[in-house]
Length: 145
Image (cartoon, rainbow, N blue to C red; front, side):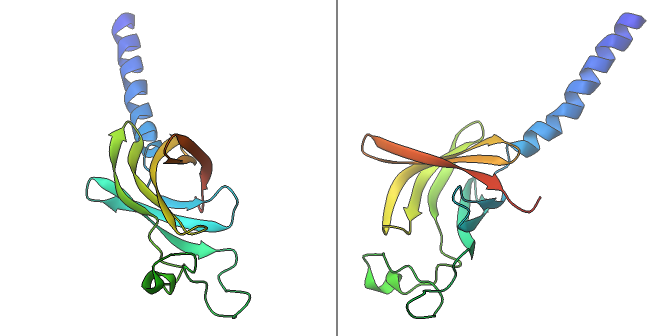
């Protein structure tokens, strides 16, 4: 009888731990960039994820006093779009446990890079991008829990 109770206790502990792990693997939510200058809302898009800028530390262009735009974009039509609401991810599809791969847009230089995002903890998201063999990344933290 004690053995059955021990097996049942282990089984219940495993079940109660599963939802917490599954929740920590969810990229959905609001994330603060490593520099703390932007917040990105990540949501499910089909089988993948999407990410858009929802907050900027400096939402206005200091030269014009107008809302910040995607001024570094080489396409003149896109260079006029607002930074708030700007989509950052494209084609981010599942690439493994807690990981999605696709492309990320870098508004700092107006370029798009091969990228992956990986949930590394309940409040940590590793965002990486590559140009050829050169890769870099940063860790974003979950905001507003």
